[in-house]
Each structure stands twice: as C-alpha cells, then as structure tokens.
Length: 140
Ligand SMILES: [Fe+2]
Image (tube, rainbow, N blue to C red; front, side, top):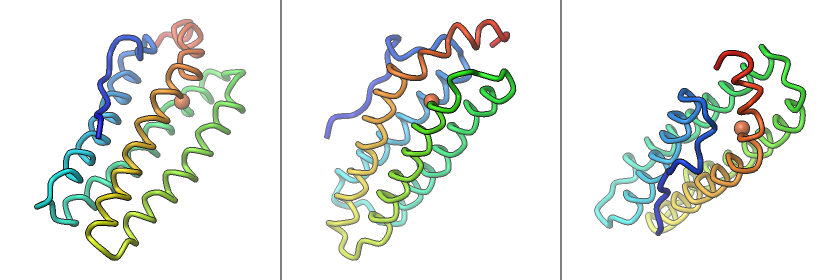
C-alpha cells in the first residue's frame, strides 16, 4: 500500500501543527509497514493502532484549543469535521481491534491507516490551511 509522504504543499505555516501532521502521517505509515509484513505480531499492530487513536485526539485537541483561545470564527464547522473524523476513526480502530483472524486484523489496520492518511491530506488542504493567516495574527 502506498505510504503518505509529507511535503511543503501540506504546510499550514505553523511549525507546531506541521510537526503534528507529520507525526500523524508517520504513525499511519508505520501501520501500513507493519501490516505488510507477514511476521508482524498483532500486539505490535495494536500498539500503533492505539497510538493512532490517542494521537488523533491529541492533535485535534491542539487545534481546537487554539480555536477557543483565539475565538476562531470558523471553529464550529471545523469542529464538526473533526468530530466526524473522531467517530469514523473509532469505528475503524474498533473493527481492527475486534477482528478475529490475523488476516482481518492486518487488512482492517491498513484500512484504518489509509483512512487516516487520506482524511488528513484532504483536511489539511481544505480546512486547516484556512486558519493560517488567523493563527499568524495571533502570534503562532
Ligand atoms: Fe483540523
């Protein structure tokens, strides 16, 4: 499966957020790598899936903290997009973690990672880039 390569087109112009987005892609890539290896144990995969879930919440929370602090006017619709992601990523992670066969665990883990990477690429380009100037005005 194709991996997610961050490049400058994905920069939102805020170093802290760019680093978090890069780390997000790295976790997705780790899962894709692990799921491609036949000898991968499910414990290793589950550890990364857990990290994907935890890091998602942490990252979205970082952006929302700034929205609240700076009173960002597009916050409501941006949070709706985040909430939709929170619901769907949880469904993907639950599906992978509740799968019973090794093949299903691998396949559903890749689905979760691919969903995350694809969502993030699109979300950065469409929504996150809208806050760049606003965040800059507030000192980020
Ligand atoms: Fe966002």
